[in-house]
Each structure stands twice: as structure tokens, then as C-alpha cells.
Amino acid sequence: MAEGEASGSEDRKPKSDEARSAFSVPDGVGVEPEATEEDQPTSEFSVPDGLAAVPDVEPEGSAFATPHTYSAAHSPSAYTGAGFPVTRMKDSLWQDRMRTMLRMPVDIRPVPEPSQKIAAETGPAVGRVLDLTLRIGELLLAGGEGAEDVEAAMFAVAHSYGLDRCEPTVTFTLLSITYQPSLVDDPVSANRTVRRRGTDYTRLSAVFRLVNDISAHEVEISLEDAYRRLAEIRRNRHPYPGWMLTAAAGLLAGAASTLVGGGVLVFFAAALGAVLGDRLAWLCAGRGLPEFYQFVVAAMPPAAMGVALKLTEYDVRSSAVITGGLFALLPGRALVAAVQDGLTGYYITASARLLEVMYLFIGIIMGVLVVLYIGLQFGSSPQPEDVLQIDPRPLLQIGASMVLVFTFAILLQQERSTVLFVTLNGGVAWVIYGAMHTTAGIPQVPSTAVAAGLVGLFGQLLSRHRISSALPFITAAIGPLLPGSATYYGLLLIAENRLNEGLGSLTNAAAIALAIAIGVNLGSEMSRLFMRIPGAAGSVKRRAAKRTRGF
View (cartoon, rainbow, N blue to C red):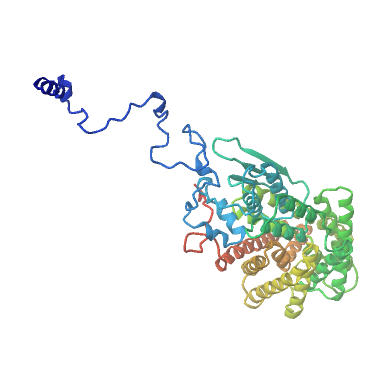
């Protein structure tokens, strides 16, 4: 028994000095089994113990693997980057939602759920979605829509079908879009060239409604349905026949001549000249001549009618005939789009549009100057000062301005339901202009800018009410404000070899045209004060694009 106790005490004694180390495991504490080499972490970026892994996702084996947050399905819904909740975005129209997201960096854009159903197994059909996006953008750009709205529409379509990391790019003739699934996947790019342009605001409004339905969460449109609706939009015939367009061009010129002081004879002479010019332009277009020569030819008949009336013994304002013909040709639509692109930061597209406006304007000048020079050889002695002496006839001028807007809307192929709204918008604009310039004596440029600003304001509000493009409610309404008189006055001075005065008048016409474009854009921006725009939480401010401010 003593031997047993002695043996047990010897076992409890330390066998060496190492047992007395401070790093030895105390008695009663279990020792974990040694980790094998396979259990050791292979990288310092591995998921720490205790951190729950994302379900249904393979663990990341490298620091360069695709992060989980780049998948829309597993993206944290609470992260918004800009400080406003995703549910707030759904309350606004698609134009404002997409503009807000496009002006944010890609890495902090919110990733709400796609508005259209996507197969969970296969994901979005990237190629078909990109093709549909480019086709929709092509119709919008060819119809005269601004680059910012075209980009917003393309982003809305791609985003609605699950392509949340895409970047559309719009120039004057080229559309492109790039989609990158993640930071480590190869990007997919597609582009489309816009070679043919046409004015059909009925088609433009239909495309806007299609984009609105695609981006709406409560409307389900598959890719096949979207392609079918787009094909129907492209096949739809214009709402007005050719003879009605020609008659509308004549009425527009007659109403414009009445607006600048013409009488009954001047009305019919201007209408006849515009009809002949329109038919000649159609003939040149059928022969494949560029648009520059079409404008040269279209400007000649109204000028010839004015010169012919001046050679007769009738005491009429022949200058009003030529001025009325110029109203039907001045490229106000292209000018407004050019200035809008420049003010929103699309300088390449704005430069191309302004160059197009300059070419068309030079074509009009060449056509009129050729006829005026020939008239001078036959003894026609125009009096340029008569162009600026317009007797105020308020009621008649208001009626003429509304007829001008009405016929302009027909020439732009607008929907019949929008013609009345744009006619009233143009009439209000002319009343404001007349009250400021004729009654109050305010200079022409600021009066024009204020009237154009009201056109942009009302046009933008009407477009949001009807979920349509703003162009059908704006372009025709600025028709009475176009600088037809200043343009013709400058041309007469140049024809009489008074170059300095003529160039000064043309510069004044350019200033009026820019005042129209800037006023329309400013009015459109002011309309956002009355609308619910996605912005910071608890605010209705719109996130403006950050500029360099010159440095």
C-alpha cells in the first residue's frame, strides 16, 4: 500500500523544469487537437470563423473573386449610397429616376429589383436586351430627342430587364451601351449608327409610352412583347397624309405673314410660295439630294413671290411674304435640342446639332439671297426698314399665332390629342411676348426668353401629366417666337451691300434663337420645382450633374 502511494505521488511530480513554464496548459483545461495543414486558412482574405456565409453562393476562394454585393439578387437592399431609400425611387417617373441614377457613380448606385420578371436559372438575355435598348434609343434620337433623355430611356430599358451595371453613351450619330456583370467578368458592348432622321412626334410619344411600361413595376412586358410593340411603332403610318402637310405649310406661312403685318393678299401669296417650296423640297428629297439643298430650294419660291409683288403696282407689304416663308423653314426644333444638349453636358452632340443648324440656316440664306439679287437686277427696290415697322393688332396677331402653332404641330406629325394643348401653349406664349415687348417696351431678346420659358414650363408639366415626351408640347409652341423678321431684315441689308448692318441683324436673330432655346430649357428645369423628384431623404431636390466649373 505504501508502495502504491509512493508511486502515485511520483506521477504527480513534474518530470522536468519545462512543466513549470507560464505557457503550459493549466490542469482541468481541455486541449484542442492540433490543426492539420489542410485546415489552415489558405489566404488572409478567407471568411473569418463565426461569420455567416451568403446562402446559395460558393465561398470566395480568392481576394479577386466576384464579391457578393455585385449580384442584384443578393445586394443589400438597405444600402443606397446617395442617402435616399429605394422605395422613394419608385414614386417618380422613369425619366427622373434614371437621370438621378445616371448622375451617380456606378459603385454607389442603388440596386432595386428589376421591374420585369427574369428567369432565375438563366438570368437576363444580355444580347437581346442590349439590342432592344439600342433600337429604342435609335428611334428617340432620330426623332429629335435630347441626348440626356435618350440615355435615360436606354438605361431604363436595360435596368428593367436586370442589367444593373450598364453604361449607355449617346452621340449625334452613334449609340453604344456596355454591360459588365462584375468587376472580374468581361464587359459586353453593342452599338448602333443613326443614319436616317425624321420628324414624327406620334412615333416619339409611342416609344416613350413603351419605355414607361417597361420600367413600371405593375406592368409585365416580356422581351417578345417589347419587340412586338416596337415593330408596330416602326410600321405605323404617319397620322397625316402628304397633301395635308403641304396645306399646313401654306397656312403656316400665311399666318406668319399676318403676324408681321401682312394683309389678305399677302396671306395668300405667302401660302402659295410656301406650298411651292414644300413641293420642290419633296422633289429634291425623292432625288436623294442632301437636306442643305432642299432648304435652298424651299426658300426660293416665297422669296420669288415677295419680289414679284414688289414689282407690281399693288401697295402691299411684300417683305411679309418672304418673312412668312422663313417661319416655315427656320430649324427651331434642332436649335432647341442643340442648346439643351449643351446645357446638360453633352457637348459633342450639342456641337454636331449646332453645326447642322448652321448649315440649314446658311441654306435658307443662300436661297433667299439668290432671289433677292435677281430681283434687284429687274428693278425691285426693297425697303429694309419696312420689315421692322409692324403695326400692333393684338387680337389678329393672337389668332394668327395660334393658327401658326396649329399648323406647325401638324407638320411635326403630332398626335391629334396633343394639338389643342400645344396651340393654347403657343397662344399664351405670344400674349406674354406681346405684353412685354409691345406694351411694356422690354427689349426683344429678354421678352422672347421669358415667353419661351413659359413654353418650356407648361410643356414639361403637360408631358408629365400625359406620360409623353416634352417635344410635342414645346417645339410647335415656339413657332411664333422664331426670328423671321430679323433674319429677313439682315438678308435685305446684305443684298444691298450693307454688310455690317446685315451681319448685325443676323447676329440679333441668332441671339433671339438662343434666347428661345435657353428659355425653353430653363422653363423645363423650373418645372421640377412642382414635381416629385428623387433626391435626398425627406427632400425633393434633384441631384444636378457635377461640373468642373472651368478648372
